[in-house]
Image (cartoon, rainbow, N blue to C red):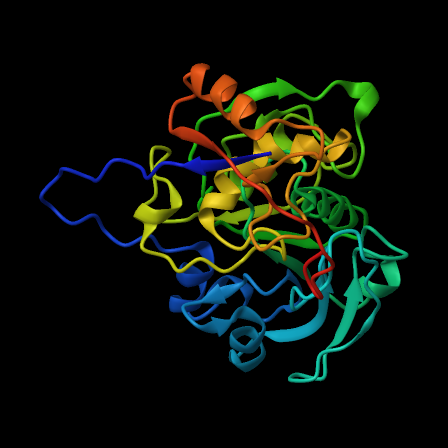
Length: 312
């Protein structure tokens, strides 16, 4: 068995402190939600849709001139408590009384009846930059629903936590699925706003020609910046991505889900532990370290997977 440890990024040497990164949700909120004035909106969000420590649901619900008409939750649910692959049900948000429609259950995209009376859909979910993270699939299908039903679509942009460098194989068309919906590299190097523009502009999904798409950009972020340098607080994006270091290796180590080995699910540090009962941890670590993978070191480890409520 082997443990994978990402090494810290080099410290910035510029003596001037960088301007703090501001997400699209920050920008929209500080502008008083003017872009949404007079509209009845549906939010596609989860627990990562925070402005500092306040959830976007609460901010929109309290905003003057904006009516919150519906909430849509992706995989893991509106509040993020569902395990990977667990189907989520519709319901009602306890705090606001607004109906909640699951996009990871019987439906993968909003139905026309869910959109009745809405003027716009607003997407605000933190991605981690990997092609097979389902939130970006949910975004594309919701864009299709908005186009089909004449709704505007807003994306509140957030940084790509693993930076703007694209790497890895492109998706082959015959393997397209909900966990691989676009012909993009494994580490796609885009923010969700950039990806939304690409999905529409390059017709990665059909039926988006007439979609009225608006991206509220993230401010003060550039493609060389990894998450620790943003100054933003990490919120676990799903139960098995508890921290930035896990997000950093996920685009590679998630592939072990497809073989007869463990990628560490059922431990407190998934995706940073890889192994199988027949593996020689020391020999494997030596082989991987000899490959000279930049920013990574490997060491032998022993672990036993188990059921962890809410996680694996």
